[in-house]
Length: 622
Image (cartoon, rainbow, N blue to C red; front, side, top):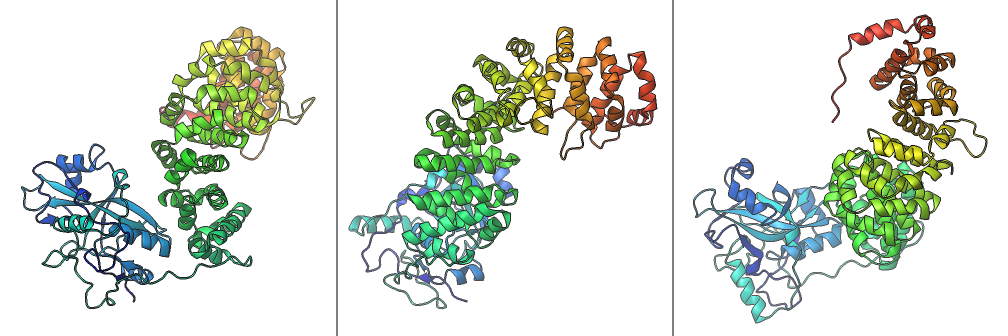
């Protein structure tokens, strides 16, 4: 097996621009921590000491090193060393080593520190950290190729945002003096004279300069996926752009094609291209967005660094790339609570909110889409998005945006309105007046507007009154129809949201019970109970009938006469506990009408109702 080539380090005869070791690369936990002296990594008692030692925890925390992730990392495996056999390794330049490995293998650079305990001090009292960069394989495993002292074959590596600043310098007397001072502080493989140690006898001979890089490859147009990924790493700038475009088209074609790109190791070089400019950057971003659309790739993309990369594009990318960056974040957030949390923690909200007001139409749409998914069933994000100032620009897009933008904006507001603290702010921004006209537009905008009104009306009497005052009842009832007089019918989900809005509006409101029933809602809601559409849910329709029938004799009779009892009895046998609960509640209200009692018994509702008496109570709400 091959090994990385080890080059002469600072003190060699070749003058070139490179990263030089400096005393400022060393950080101390306190004034008593000796910068020089015996060092131990991992600290004694690791990993338990990370939790039990307050000094160590504070040193690695936000106020000092600002650590993100920490791992105990050994020397490279034989397989990794073989892969890097063509890479020149400089013993005292972990920064350049990481860059050369990235250029050769496409492995991402991780920037941080090695954490040592000062072995000459009282145990557990003093620690130092040495600035260091290393690499991460496509799988996320950290690999550190810089040679280590013999007694530090296992090191605690800490990824840190404070490890970014390091610049190359030309060789000079000052760099040599600084390097010698830094080497005296330890942490590198050195000889007794303090100079970097030469490679061991098994390694190739020292070289005074790295070999020339392999020639860059050209794009031919007939490459398969693996060859395209190779072009991302070793192609000319033009070839990289064309390869990224081909991979973006393949990844957008379907799940199998996206899977091939991931399997060929395409994620890491695509993320590297996000640092480029122009078409290559945009094509790489579009490829990542397509791969992120599949739940099976969300975790691997996040582990490879897609989230901070996309957030960076929101801040500094071109206008054409910013909408794709928002799309990446929106896809990564779909039904992934860890990614939802990580995206907000990475600082995505200011950029997304800015796009709502300043972006082009595609960017506005993707920003709304990202906020929609970030807020989905995530109360902390719902609050954070509102606090970031998203409500007013979202409401503005309801009346000023294109239909696709209106749909996405209404969807984002729907999820934000699920949080009790956001309902008042959304209504105060005049969202209700903008949402109600959307109910008559049909299609996606109408469906998401119904969902937003449903959540705004939930347990909020002021919003309920405002929605009724805005004349929302008739268009909500119209959305329930499967064959409207004009336009396409709403989807099943849209009709369920319209039923949910009516359910919330009619709760304990007899005048509204009268108006909704008079508008023809009862037979439409009963019809929804009998539909067998794929993925259909019945809670909202049953809940609306429950509230229409609550202490309202005329509606109780009308619901029974419309044929609600048999489908409600059938719902009692559904596996969904919430559907069972709503069906039982509706039957309870209908049973207050003598005309319905026989129908309930005849429909066979009694056995499942009795069985429900022995079922465990539902869990409390989160």
